[in-house]
Length: 374
Image (cartoon, rainbow, N blue to C red; front, side, top):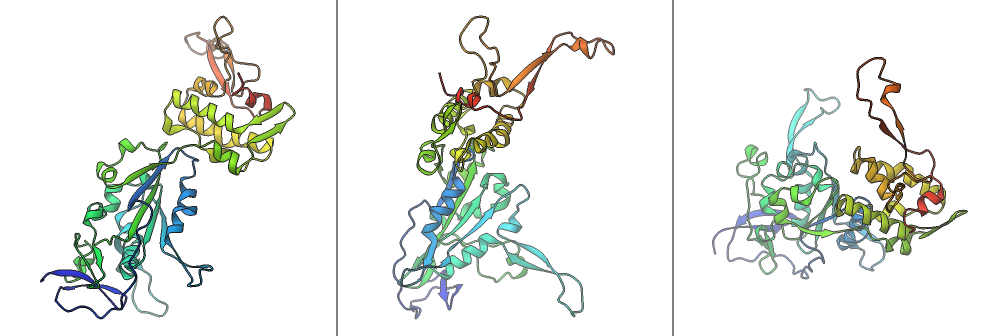
């Protein structure tokens, strides 16, 4: 049948006319699909181990080993982290300045350079019998439509080219013209994405809700939630920290705080279990509260200190005169000042008292234990 297709010649993918002749390429074993979706995003609150899972579990699907099975030979994947300034030129292809070589005549020159995605697509097409992957950390921090461009269509499974083993060529799918490559060379082969290139991203749902993502992106990716799991602390950490005031149960502590956060905010802003991994002493736990947990809750509940006090059980429960009063062993203390003390002499101001909240320099063990007791 007449037409065009990608073929594999001496390690280089090439677009040629389809003929009845079969390329003289030795037979290869059939490629086995990876045990993940072709386009996948691991999403969840901060500290739930999304990047860890990507590196330690998913990446194992894309390792080449020696024939004797001993030792890693090469990685069939690449990592990239998206950010607000990341662009199509960084990801697919773009014009890059080239410094003049020592001793050469002339100034800076410019040339079209492949981005990380096009580079990995070429690697995958050069080796159609193995799976390759591009891991994108913080995928929701960039402008997806701007970064992916025309690739947002090509990454769909039914739009990719597939390898025909019997005829030794890439076929099917959709092939497109790239703005930089084909502007310089209109006769260059069209670009396509092979079905052995997996795209796996991570997404912090506290930064941006899935609902706010580009609709095209949500439709083309499968989403796997990676939520807080307090049992990870029991399996891989130190679940109980001993102190003079009693034992601190980190599993119960995380569960109770997340229950309150989910009620006061939502499930996407819970605390990940990694905040309590690597804690082997009370000094470690106190440091985690002062340097990580309290600042994160400040960001979640901006200027709403009472909600942070509720998460920490800093307010007296129940009914009556004492209900809602700040406990003596509260983590977030507060004090009230009268405005007439400071403003009456300089301006006419409402005399209503103002509450000032105090972030501690140190936290007593009993103040943490009371978060989940009772």
